[in-house]
Length: 173
Image (cartoon, rainbow, N blue to C red):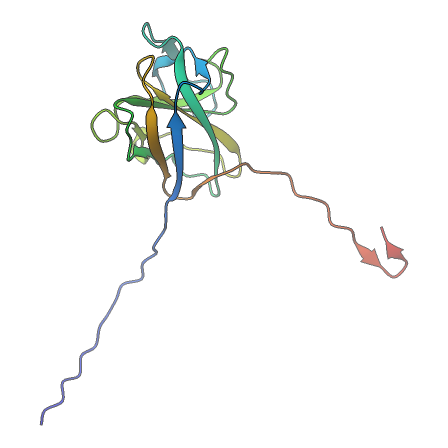
């Protein structure tokens, strides 16, 4: 009998799972006047203009952050909303959606869905909370969707470190 010995060489790789959140836009969702175009500015000063049809648009806000300061990698998937838009803000004010804008996208994803990819150069500061606003394109649209954060992006907020009491030979400070 012959014995076959095989050696398998694998290159190192990292499997990085995306952070995914589900959302819903419905008649109970808050509304705002949506922007339509925008430049990209990681310093929260992107220019934009308001949409002529984007008045009274349903939206949902998702706080998120980057652990190391990567470019934004955000995509809308599994959507029953026919046409979405997304905006990234340093601080979101629904009374003036043109303020504190980092990036905006209408149809950068599959079909009429939205995506901001690393190619858009929306580099985020590490450990800084940003606000992703997902909205419908047209008034009255409703439905469900998933938001997929790629790279090192995570849903949630960055909180300040809580001081830890220090023990010394005399007791607790």
